[in-house]
Image (cartoon, rainbow over all chains, first blue to last red; front, top):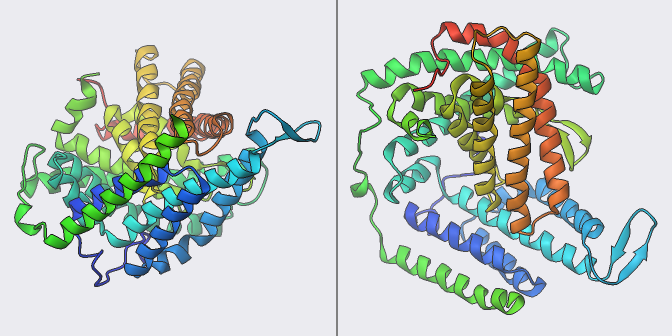
Length: 256
Length: 185
């Protein structure tokens, strides 16, 4: 089972060039950030849902629904408690609820959700290989893209090793879910040590393995032939750019 | 500061960046957090990694922590705040490395003085990380500064001081034998 959200699908959005996906992500992040009003936030949210529908990525939303609901709930609670307005609405001695707090709380929760939805959409349509290729194509040095790509591959290995260690330690009676706070914290050390030593062992073998295959930090790879910007890519990017441009006036109207 | 960029010119350091990133991101999932207030305050054992690795592997661990945090966000939490998480985690690890390098000159003993320096490095670097991330979150108006700052600061400083000190005492000598400890340029 993959830990990440990507699933191979044959949709227009999955087939976009990685550069277009990365640029669109940045533009969508801007749209979500500047859409602070409930109305514009709702427009961004519904547009994102439409994109989820078009990319057949609702499974990712389903997977993340619990976490998204909890984040929205906590954001609302936090802003209700910490929003400082001019007129108190309710004075509960230790907490004062100000006028405008409920509206502000909903706005911020919607904004946070929109940002996360942009990220989830990107992760559902972009495989890790395309992400690192996209970084190289956008001018990030090969050595950096390589480190990122290698890290992604190693994460899967370490996560499964981690689960194995947790189970093995549980059998030996070291259950981190039992006991007081300090004893639980102490119980984590025997779990982390094998994982760290496993990583160090991997580092020792990886260096000669990479060097024997001709890897050097100064290497340059040419992947330009692998990707070609198609008319669909340009159209998609223009659409996202227009969408972002449409979100900007609301932001300036609110803050200027 | 030059060493922050020179680590990218050595294969061994690049591998250490990836290993740090993978271990940091990889410990976030199987090692469940200790919930204090569900959904709001939790202690993540993985928070011990950036300081521990920063002291052992130097700038490579700082880059690794930053990338590791970004990778962890790839499990569904990717947002503009990830950029501040990237910078915050870089500083979390790099500040610890700078403090350790400044105050510890002799051999590694993990005696009382070195434990105190380790805890000091953990607390100061956690403060820097919390400040960076909380400023970013405040800038994006996602959550109140005070809450985010306190949650990150308490979580990072407690976990890196308690678990980190134990791990450092148990692991440093073993890792030193492999020749991977960063001794500077």
